[in-house]
Amino acid sequence: MPTRPGLIEEMNERSREVFRRVVEAYLETGQPVGSRTLTRSMSEPVSAATIRNVMQDLEEMGLLGHPHVSAGRMPTQAGLRLFVDGLLEVGPLEGEDRARIESTLAAALPPGRAGADIPAALDRVGAALSALTRGASLVLAPKRDAAPIRHVEFVPLAPGRALLVLVFADGHVENRVFSPPPGQTPSSMREAANFVNAFAEGRTLPELRAALAAAAEQRRREVDGLARELVESGLAAWVEEDGAGSATGRLIVRGTANLLSSPEAQADLERLGTLMDDLERKSDIVRFLELAEAAEGVRVFIGSENPLFSLAGSSLVVSPYMNAERTVVGAVAVLGPTRLNYGRIVPLVDYTAQLVGRLLSERS
Image 1 (cartoon, rainbow, N blue to C red):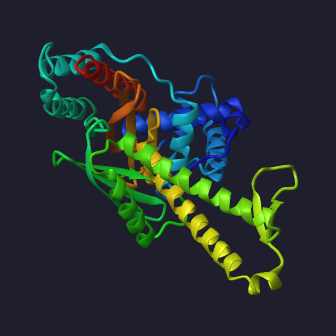
Image 2: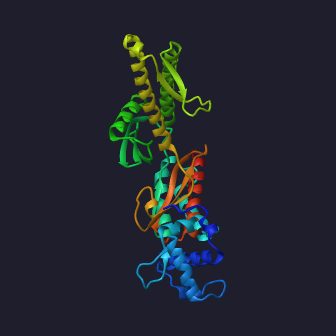
């Protein structure tokens, strides 16, 4: 749940301190925090009544809540989001954590060993992360973008979410969750998969994307050529959409009476409509693959923000790792309750991802 930009800056110093101390105490104990407890930890003496007033204000802002009337306060999902984005102090990675991850990878991927050991190494990294964080770990194996593809499927999951299923020539199957272009339906995704599979076999994912982009560009040239012929013949005209000299606009058909007596013109317009529809579909399909290949930096997802699980009361800390070409090829993540020790787990996940990427690059 996003919070209003600049909300931290709008809060005065006392409100920020009360909010921070409530969140930190909750993350440590898992229990609601009362005003009397806070009077013992504030940087300056302040009464319990004053703290209760501040907590009431923070509750009205949607940052704090309480399980029942007599209880203390605890952060809401929006409050945790604000804390992570604006108040979280991330320190250096603890020496013990660093040593545990380094020794796990060193044992799993000793120098000179082949890349076939990588899946087992990632399993051991996941086990080490689970033990260190007491949460569930997720280590996504490197993307196989350099491997030839046999077959592709697009599977709708929920509004705004879909699954790309890649079947490679060696039988390996890889799934990627992504957000497709707006307005897609199960039938349009089936059509997209059929079109992609006509180009896919034997091509790597980057080669496939390039082939689809070339097909879309060829269709765009056909659209431009036919539209230009209609304009030059006086049967249509380009009208700019914004009146500001933009190259984008609408093709307006004119001389309707002439069209009725000209089967050739009618055929050209019908063909133009077909070409433009086909161009739009091909452009969407190219965008499918671009979105499926995209990846973001270190992220913290809280509660319903979680793109994979959407579990109430859970958080996901995820960091991608890169190959020698600085391309994102996989990710390391920890899933746990919302009261994670973010200050410790964020740098731990980040460092693990960097280390995995470095070791994989050395063995590529």
